[in-house]
Image (tube, rainbow, N blue to C red):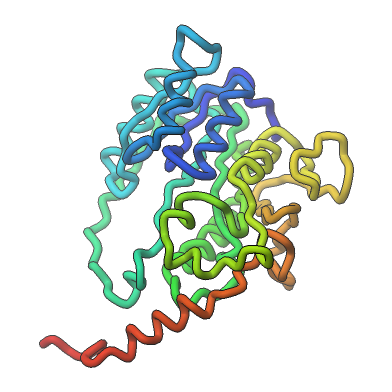
Length: 293
């Protein structure tokens, strides 16, 4: 069920920068309280938090330092949000990292044992919305970043698997699948910028993605034209399991026989061969893959 964000409250992880910050800003501008959960705030995020204090605006922003790999900190994040705002209506688990240069897939760092623990006490009958950030990498292979691509494929499968929650319990789980977005995930990594050919490839802005995210929450249909509220252009129905690809236009991603992102403006990185070749050279290094036993 669609609902207005005005007067609601949200948790947005990874909102210290990029798409998640743009979404948090848009929620705040539309009258929604936001808890920003991240490791730190970039200067532009700090400005937003400072602006939305109880003394200055009706919508409030609260920063909670959170490492999303730590279950205790995640629980604390919810506790703080509920203490500050009461009921939480929207959750955007948008925090993520791109594999470091070359790729930790080829040099597995190991991982800690699962710390998952059941949490309860948050169920009620009001409509809720959980919006995930996937990627066109969830439809494409990515030799140089296989873990990133795998996680985005996983998000798509997870979102679609949660579709029945909408009909059964009023909890709508959706996702956006952005193309090439001008965020620090790209601009802070020169090795990634090699893939983008200026003039040939078009950047999508975080604000454009955020507009589609807000539309997913507030509307029963979303236009292929970003920011359109008058029903112009092709319309995509929103329900549990909906995934909308966000390039310079919007496209619904089908679970079956989907044609893929293609070469739509905002979806292309023309020079991926640079990072692919760098990864291949890494694999050719003497001793790579040799047993250390």
